Image 1: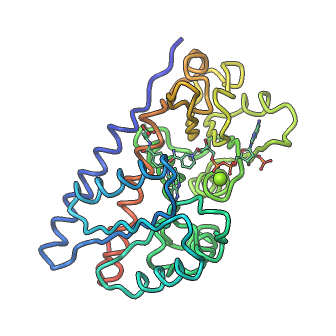
Image 2: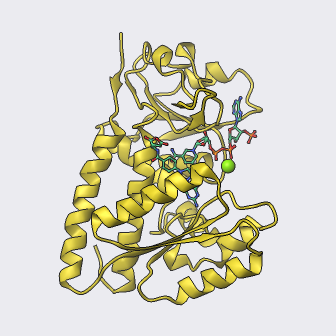
Length: 286
Ligand SMILES: NC(=O)C1=CN([C@@H]2O[C@H](COP(=O)(O)OP(=O)(O)OC[C@H]3O[C@@H](n4cnc5c(N)ncnc54)[C@H](OP(=O)(O)O)[C@@H]3O)[C@@H](O)[C@H]2O)C=CC1
Ligand SMILES: Nc1nc(=O)c2c([nH]1)NC[C@@H]1CN(c3ccc(C(=O)N[C@@H](CCC(=O)O)C(=O)O)cc3)C=[N+]21
Ligand SMILES: [Mg+2]
């Protein structure tokens, strides 16, 4: 048996088309969504992501600003920039690229972003709203995972979802969203005994660990949906997920590739959040 591939690039392009249409309609009413991306330091991987985000903005007709700050930027300088962006009327979304240099406290920076402009969904109030079920800006990668499932026709409702990884940016929020979508959710991590056995119980297996090719065929229940969030750079420069794709695809019913799976959805959900924030800022409801 061999799995069907979930084409994240294609699904992402479909959603971007919807966003492009809505953005054009908004422009008729004099509203243009605006995103500010702030990058501190010269991390090459971050440079690529930031460039992709600016490209996506241009492609969809958004206004965008990229602020590249030197690695030595002080925390108070960065907070000053966020304060200006919070008050800037043509900016609806603010994203500060993580990780930040060690001398800057990430929490202080995330807390400083106005909740209305928190398109990453990382602010404590956004996290609280997600937990309560209020309508907040949802974190992009977890929201992208849910969209992939729904648009593949694999609704989480009534399914057993197992999530591997419990980080604040992926594992925890994706678990909350799956619960909200009426899955029965098991959260696992590095201290979970006999992880392959737990994983094998999943109808939907979401993997966000950061260990290349951790998940093998015997971790996957035959026919299960496997969503690979991992992005690992191999010594040869190639990108690779947390799932051993070729091996796991022998058991899975559906599986996401890396690249071309969850990654493109992350940026698309960022654009979707920025559009949503722009509508709210202008009193326009869905
Ligand atoms: N596609 C995309 O858009 C994005 C991709 N990523 C990628 O997703 C992956 C995870 O990212 P992130 O959540 O930030 O990572 P973190 O390092 O913050 O968290 C990793 C989690 O995995 C758990 N873990 C580590 N090793 C094992 C193991 N051997 N068995 C079981 N659990 C383990 C850790 O457990 P414990 O808590 O016990 O330490 C932790 O909860 C990375 O590859 C990252 O690059 C991240 C963000 C966006
Ligand atoms: N404040 C903040 N918000 C983030 O959302 C954030 C961040 N910081 N820091 C870094 C991580 C990582 N991340 C990715 C975005 C897009 C792809 C992506 O587009 N991937 C493509 C191709 C990537 C490639 O070829 O290099 C794919 O998987 O097909 C991946 C990873 C967002 N992150
Ligand atoms: Mg992390």
